[in-house]
Image (cartoon, rainbow, N blue to C red; front, top):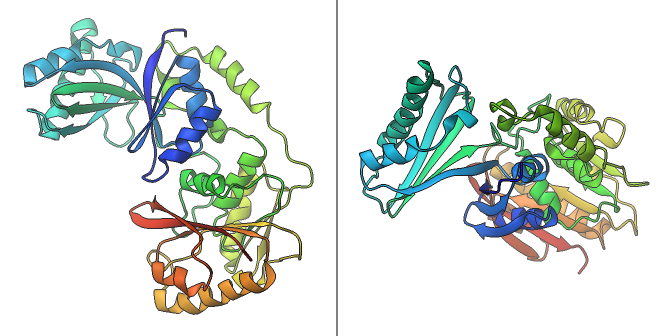
Amino acid sequence: MTKRSVFFASCAPGLEPVLHSEAQELKLAKVERQVGGIYFEGDLVDMWRANLWLRTAVRIFMRVGRFHASDAAQLYKGASEVDWSRFVSPEGSLVVDSQSRESELFHTHFIQQRVKDAVVDQFRKATGVRPTVDVDDPDLRIHAHLYNDRVTLSVDTSGGSLHKRGWRQYQGIAPIAETLAAAIVLMSDWDCRSPFIDPFCGSGTLAIEAALIAAKVPPGSFRTFGFESWPGHDAASYSRFKSAEIERQSWPRKLQIRASDSDAKQVEGAKQNAEAAGFGDRIRFDVLDALEFEAKPGWNAFIVTNPPYGLRVGDEEQLVPLYRDFGQRLFESCSGYRLAMILGNPKLRRALGLPEGEQKPVQNGTIPCEFFRLTLGD
């Protein structure tokens, strides 16, 4: 466990600063922000911690090889020198993906084929059995990155996107990714003590991620990871580690999280999700129009939400009056409250009629969006 490796934690575009802050709070070593994620160094326990705790990371990759390759023979040789038996059994499955820039080897399908050949040939020579290729649900995902003929081979330690927390029972309509929801909560600067309100809760993702943050629950505590199926994985040590991390959770005294939606089916699904995440009695869900959420004078709550913006859900022209009325409600009833939203339509943001506030570009799946934050009444 003491051998140190280089890791890359990937994230959605625009969330690199949030992920960087998370890694620093975890006290991971030599954290370096890059486009699309962060690098850090550590041992296997640090890799466990990163998978278990990083709320905005999508995958954690571990570097296993680095070498020069300007032709197919060099690529095959370099990939052959990695001991792949550490990560998959001869009877297991794998898939290789790749990226290439400014390199002699530029055809990604060919790169993937040669790396795959090197891996399976290694097993065939050693055992007579070779792993199969499974593009949908492999036991091992290998990533080959080429830049200026420099090859970096990495393995996916997560075993699947980390947005798949494991608590979701109800999918709902175009739900926001759990990783992005966590980022919005973190970017809102919510103090985990003030009331938290989501008037457009959908399947409850924002409220549940807020509860996980407030209660100090590891977001990965509901799922298994790719490294758990590696040959030689120390399951007993990992189980003790995970149990110790989960035991740190506690619910802030008197904290109120309230979420509502006008669609009763969505609210019922949100309750199922909250129950699965362990917050069935902690989050209050109501069937309410977005303009009817409770706002008490002097409450100084945080309103953190992801309203529809006319692309995947709703129609833009029909949403303009909703945004206008919602902005008016905020202006009239929520002075001193903090507002944080993700918006995918500048026209709808203008319809709110609120000051410009703070804006940052983020990506919601394939949709370019902006994170919008301000203190109401300023």
